[in-house]
Image (tube, rainbow, N blue to C red):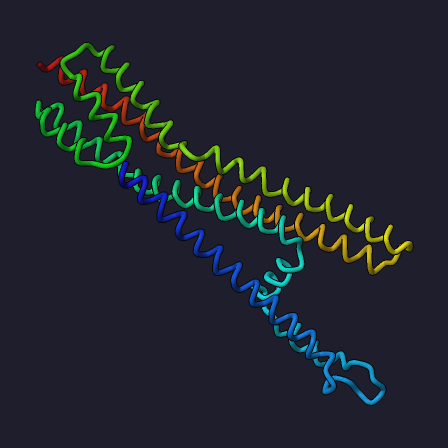
Length: 274
């Protein structure tokens, strides 16, 4: 339990630190953009006819990398919905990282472990088999330990105990996955909601201006579509992590089932030889 809490705290701190640094850099980029836009209208950027020289802004745009462009788009989006989408990304990644770390620590070389365990059981070294199962991490060793604790019972009771405890371990492997699916569904939904509200704001601006200006319509639609783009990107990123987590859960579950069958066979041989 302590290890699980430490893993969860570490994952949340890591993702929150990444989110804070991203938000801080985005705000700094916004301030720089404001200053840069003011500088382009300075007297040094004006030509003799009084028209701003457009060539001074082009090199900055061309030299801007993907990271700067991403921050710029984040700033141009609606602050409220972009923050909600970013929060969904941070929390979703926190649960993903926690699950990946937990599942990685739960994996062992099941075939090697079961080979050693079967040798001890067939040889009659039950205490040694219990010590090996107790000292080995992961659900495979846990279900074997539960079966060995009831080795003096009937094979039906042992099988029932292993099956019941295996269901508990499977539930522990899937813990937190429902939250990941929630954030996968929330991210594009928030993006679409931002799109609808952005379109409503664009039509409000058209109504106030009393004219359908391409500039007014384009500005409102741009902000609306940016939230949708970021929402879909967040959902895709979390979906990749979620599928990876499901593959690890399926692998560990298959190891548990194979190990349970091997354990019951070894206990049967032990009882026959006894």
